[in-house]
Length: 564
Image (tube, rainbow, N blue to C red; front, side, top):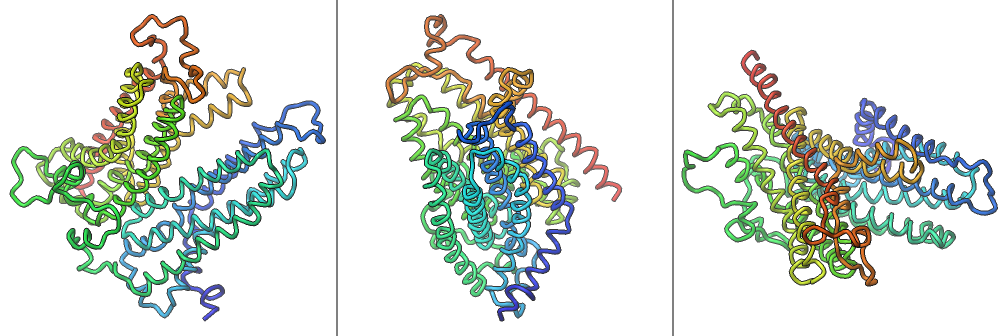
């Protein structure tokens, strides 16, 4: 049976042929190489003379930037390749055929994991020539490069196994993607923090990575591997007709941890009770159907995991950023925004694609509902769920404002924070709904929505930080700074917050405005200039997205449905 693991594994062969022959693989490899090469090119030291005996700081920064960029890019790509390995079989209705094949479950899991990691391995090793260019500059040894790649490969294997395991628990790739990102993101942030904190201890960092990283990889991958194998050996989620009906009482009885009750507060805010009577005339049927059945028709496991993981992280971040280091309060808001970026698109990216997948889109278009009724019903149902879930993470902020006297004079800033979170909820749902109108598969729509949101919200901040570090006095620095008006993360950090930090010294906003506080609470109009620009841009963006979706509905759907 060993040959079915490697040389003659049909699952591995089929997945490799499908994945490596798609245009996406070549385009992704090109984009990946261009990004890393551009990063090294623009950050290349411009010093006329480099003293390699002094461990130049510029080359050290370049190497750290290259490896961390490589690590974050590959880590974020891993779920997109691995999360749909098993859940994709369930969506294509081929899960039973795979389980009925002569292959052992171990061979199936190994083939799925190896196929997903092969493409990522190509990306990782294709960066080696660029990494070798940095070695002659000094500031880093060969063993540090070796340790960096050992840690990178170990992390990719762990993240790939986590993504495959998520796919085995869910029937939809979208749910598996979200849970994978929820588990992987804290691990990525912890790894990046470890790399920076251990930077002064180069040899110790190398020894820890070379010894601990492979051990952790085996300790995490081995149990997950056999958990997936046991689920394939004794499957309880076959996609037959019986699996399409959700028994809420049985799910609540078998659930571990959080239990969602539709008839209790605050659960009923995002999971309204099942309708047992006729619908009133003034209710939008699309909105009612989406909110009561579509979003929760496949169970609440993903929802419960998202709430539990996010609240667990919120407790730690709340204590650090809202109570101990109060001047770092914007970083807690960044965590709230990141949560919404992950959870918001899930409930809107499948709004229209699910109709296509079930072949019910034509039936919906022939109803008496107007395009605007259909669109706002789809949008508002997903927006309501994502907004309520995001608001769960805002109660620590409200609690801090009430309990800590340092926040009592910061009410304008707190209101601005809430507006930024609300606008982010609206933007993520709108962008995901737009992707759902364009793409034909929910998984493709979700990945596209995540990509657009990252490029819109995070890329300008990263580009601005890079440009300000290496080209601070150039025209590009001013342009990059102006482009950050599209990012809610930058808007949060640009809002003045008049609080004292942990050391008792005044925060940067208090120092900047000292002696000029002639407005209410010490705020001036120019303090909110960046927020006003962000607010105006975001409102215009959402209006444009709504108009674009209505135009697509009229020109693409209505016409095609009439003349098909």
